[in-house]
Length: 189
Image (tube, rainbow, N blue to C red; front, side):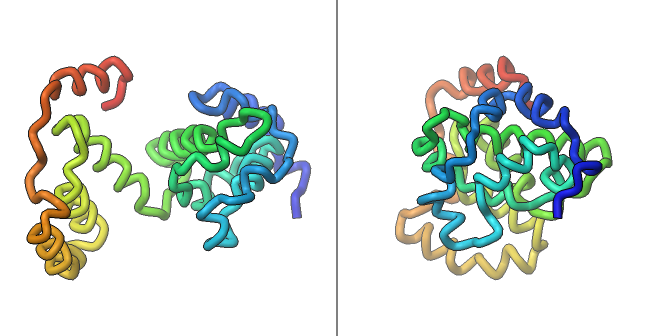
């Protein structure tokens, strides 16, 4: 049950000021974003329409502490289907950024390991100019499940390497310095 006394009427404005959240208030709850969402089809707890509605209503605590928006796979189906150009995927990125900032301040605890993976993914691009899949996966498994979790995946990784599906070491690219400059200009550390 939603209680008005628990709602933050300013949250939608705060979220709208975040990069990606600018069109939040255009939503008129048509359900276009939820129709065809691949995550919503397999996970009844994930509903992009509900997440947007919670943001507009100001259900700050319930939303920021929720794990649901971390489940988005960034397929942009909701983005393509939205008649109001709400850019739902980008709103979810804005929520993720807000949640990470709140976690760094110690105001909330993020239960999912998704931010750990996201950081390792971005760091791989910064360091190598592209994603080094094997390194990202190995570091993620090690950080989240320890050596045992990493070793459980070793045989599958070895088979993928043998079949040429995944390189062990990062591939060299031209323009690595330019990629680093892009991250610097974007202020991504």
